[in-house]
Image 1: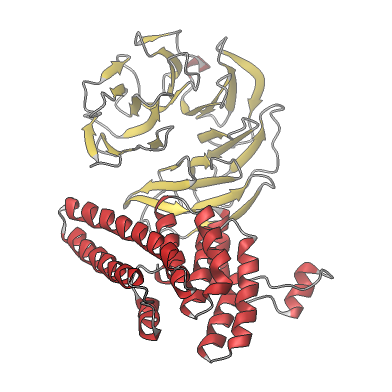
Image 2: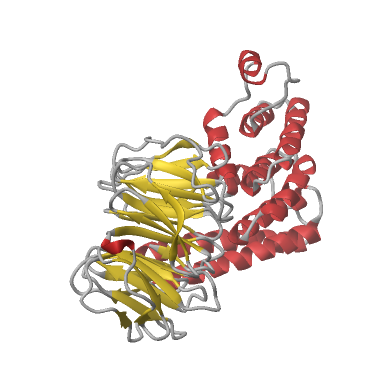
Length: 478
């Protein structure tokens, strides 16, 4: 699989030789290779060409004509052995594609469709290829367990030949800054290399129980994901480097491919299809906080943080405590804890966390205290999440008597829900119809609130606030 550089297109190849292109509009499927599986995909730097490589020994170039990827594809090479990997040079001023396979390493001129030279690697099979971000270096992972770094200008090997793997190198990837190379192999190892020196940054890690078939860096370079034959995906802290932990997969077979989108979404492909993973550290931290649901005990604080001054460590813990105090009628206690939750959430970069504090604080009638969390959530939120945060802020404004501001936010939310309703109806599926009905119900409810606010009435009585706790799709019920 591969993401386009602008992050708007995902291409996924399968064992039947087909490629599925996923965009904002309907997905389209290309019958790219008629004999065997698609083994590698790569987008050109300007995202107008998608190259696919197959076990049938072909490389196909699929062009975007502004409407479809089904334009007549162009074929590179003839009578080749299986091709395992392809990569475009990141330099936008050139049109160079590199392929690695059982024929070795081949540089292609995409414009002419011709080879720039005879296959390199002395005929040794290549499983994976990757360009450094600046395009000056190419890494090739070979079947004999070695990795070769190449000067792309001269197409000559550099002095460094990396040979810590004990079996085939199946995957290589450069970090976004080009300083680190990660590799995965048949020997179950994940290895981090210093590109400048060719030295291993730590011992080979063998956290996987099977061959490592894919490695991918997050856009910020802080996280590496590795996946393979043991059905697992492991996240790594690149700075350390050490494993962060495994994702819980439900696949019945290997993780065959992975890719990060430009905004940090990890996507993996396996036997059951394609899975999206939210692996941002702030999201993982929030989920861990929700699972723990409490602050550190004095004993735990002493063990992990020593003599540092004690302070709250869990926003979720504070939020649960504040909500419970409010429901029990302890107004002063709830007010104090909600204030602590607002201050703690404000220090994070997490829109969801700030919105949850704002939402429950508003439902518990402490909107005056949690309004800063509303604005913080909106400042941090992106796209659809911003509309959800506006919904929370609209209710909070109404609860504090700021009716014009409340109307503005709730109208924005109603417009967003109308758009969702239209999109689901256009899908023309049973699920889409059900979703459209739910969005319509939420939109009409907000329009009722807006009409009351325009009549200088606060629509949020005790019964309405209680019903919002149970509303499907509400900020606290996602």
